[in-house]
Length: 232
Image 1 (cartoon, helix red, strand yellow):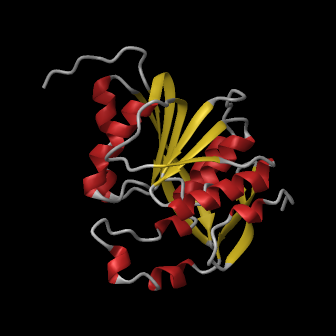
Image 2 (spheres, one colour):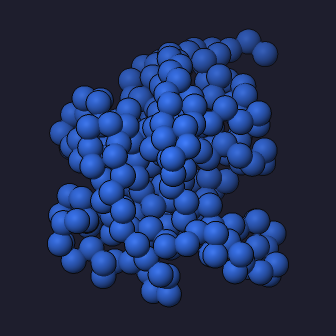
């Protein structure tokens, strides 16, 4: 692990471990919660709350490994403005940054952003930039040429806000990577953007996480320079 002082950016109160994640041609050093299951078990009903805030961010999901692997083999222009949505510990975003992207990590959980910030520093020597926001009320005033998201399509009520956020953030001609493990709830979600003129390519990638093989779907979407009118 690079000794960049990244540990000081980690949130307090978590037993932390650092592991090396092989993502395509990259070795990513990732600070993460030592026992995500114990963290999940510690969530009480009040903390769960109306928004069902659960520490999904603490896991390393197969979709994030698949996206990081794909980005490790993708040509990214140096300094390309890039946003990761629902970044968790930031694996995919760190991989993009290691390929030259200018990353902004976003998430609904402040502790997730702290881990992403630290992991960016551990792998690039520069502290990662972060922004806390809710897809239901995405902030205005920033956009990106590249937007990436992995395993975020798992709540029905967040599907439309997620698509609205993609539309708002991605610049004309820019690229989205949306990666998911073939969950039923995700079916037909990303495809809606095709009716608006986005070009979509679909890839299936197999990754191994914790000794198990997982098939993951990767959607690459390119936003048109002009939005097509859709008859309803």
